[in-house]
Image 1 (spheres, rainbow, N blue to C red):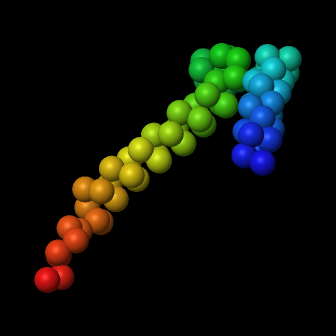
Image 2 (image 1 turned 90 degrees about the vertical axis):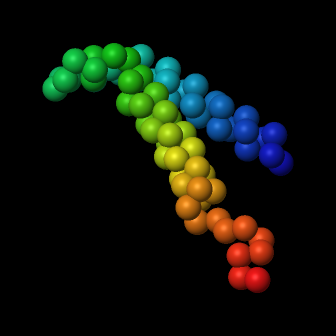
Length: 70
């Protein structure tokens, strides 16, 4: 079941990137919007960044040692 979900995920990522090349942004407001598939890559990198920062914050700030209440 997990392999099937991963396969669907990879196929949807590939289709999204392919459509980004086929249908580019025709009226970009900024120079980086002219780069094909920039929004998908930016969103993916931003998501990874948020996950890593929140994991670091959880370990550094929220989690306490096992004997904290002793």
